[in-house]
Length: 148
Image (tube, rainbow, N blue to C red):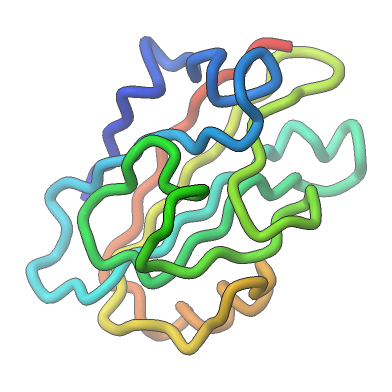
């Protein structure tokens, strides 16, 4: 399985998906070569470089029960058919990149799952990880750099 995004060019996340753009404009993602028996996808976007700044990885977006092999630009704020978890901005939507100290690398992980998850808007990172544990058919990751 692979992820593509028109919001990442040559490994760099476009300005518009973070503090130099719109902090709520979610990045577009496309899932490719996923298992044929995939029922849904889940996405986690997190900043592991934030550990040095705040002591923990910073979660920017949690999404589950995606039934199409893509997320369009701004999917987070448009009415949608998936559920969103609580990010480290304490909101149930996409929170854009805003590295405070230097350029940060952002990990975008996609999971192909064999079911829909029993999650509601506002679920936590821990709840998502626990829910997918025995349902992962495939997973993949891409990284993007966002300059401060």
